[in-house]
Length: 481
Image (cartoon, rainbow, N blue to C red; front, side, top):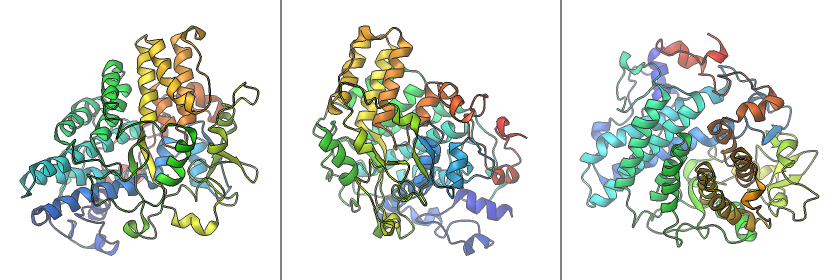
């Protein structure tokens, strides 16, 4: 049983997951031993590609479970969508699929393999090898950043697990140690390694992806000056990183640019017209197979099976009596069959036959996200005018006026204004719940909606099987002993 759990827990695979049958074998190690795999440039590229493949598997459902469904953005959809309902209504238990960290730790383990073996791979280009290594460090940082935001303290592995051993079972490490000594350290290494000339990726981590994660981490740590400085770096190459100039380009970014892109075999070429996308989870059916489609259509369309609808609380952000109407409203939401559907990524109705061929990518970071984070950082530092100048860039595009600094009576009032702007701009992008956590507003916002009031409720439960198999793990106390 322990070997079965170990194989599932770590998913030791150089290129792809082993089959279910092979998990029952007596050999719990991957099909291709790492010592035989990490030899050539082709091996290195395949090994790093697998990090992104495992991240895609991790986030296919959890993008919404972890980042959206515990927030005030969504309400229950169809009665059959019970897994989503339990998250939305704060009914999480230790057997919920969102509590399972197997795929996330598989991704982290793959990053650990790359970090261990890439330095010794014989590659014709040192810059390319360093770039791949930088991506591995950044993805490990991002993996742990998700982990500590979802569960708090988690087990820490910075070396790959390549064979069965009782040492695989570790206790939880303090999240602040992970934040400061692993996540930030990895991002600083990635910053020094990423190729800033040839790496123009948006489907993978570029230097802008590194800075986006880093700025997010600094905001989490309340290091507002460092977040501000980091985001400022991102505006120095407007030919690659820039805001969509008008609402039509904003719309195109979601319904066209994210949809159906082929794999990018030439990272030095930027194939995106929109310069606002920083890092996305890429779905391409020929690459990921028929079961690798995203849930952007299936979970949000059709009253019979949609997982969630936009909440009345979210829709109340749009004032029908305001002198100017938000141009994003009718592009984000569509009133269909007694519910407000998230239409932001779809642009109309969609047939049920297309639900399972959806290739819409998930944005992890966009430049507008960073601009609004920077506005929040400046507000925290007392730079109210500068903060509102940044918010104005987003609101101008939406056809809205921006109030002057003198309109706000306190810093909290200004922060709430910026957070509301983030809520509207980034709805459906896996950010709202983390904003509520980061600003410690989760009780205030969610208590009246689903009863979240008790300390510890902000964390997800740890999956029961992880607790059963690892004697050193302790549960999150809110969910019992």
